Length: 263
Image 1 (cartoon, rainbow, N blue to C red):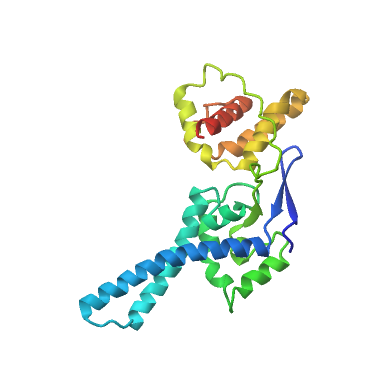
Image 2: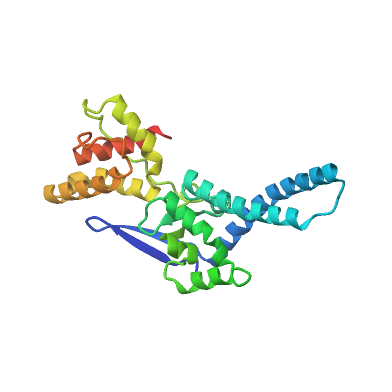
């Protein structure tokens, strides 16, 4: 697969989001960066372990048990490193962040904790039988450039839209949303703001496009699209009671306000 291949996802009422898939080259570079970061950290820890062991036992050599412990620690830390950053940095461990990549669910949502755990534990299968052969073959033959871990977890790696890159014209600032209605209290806004980080950038753009263009839609289509978008996004806010923000458009306005407040 080539780096310029794309995949399109459809959300309600024919709203389409297009992603550029990450290819082998960009993913390999990201993996090298992440591996070097983890190896450097663990190398320092390993050296300290061996120094302490030699001081306590008087044996400067590296025992088999010490080697096994260090190897196991490397595997666990490497897996945990990816899971941590995928869940706290919008699917972007440092290597992917530096190379403009991001892990997302195949439906366009942010990667979930279960998905991240599955895709990273299965890194152990992707390296088989040697030199990451299974993972490379899987990336080459799948339509979304997915390695085995991605296939099992329902995830894919895409290129970020680097809007701040040099020489790229900046899009116009979105029009400000109207003031929120009085029934939207500070407590509700705080709840939504706290959960705003679970909204992916693509979902945010879809909501903003709807809110900006809703007055151009026929009333039935406007109500239908607002309800479907709100039903999908509301699942990210389990702390909201069913009766809170029952109007779909008001709910979407508050979500965007929460995203802006969280930045």
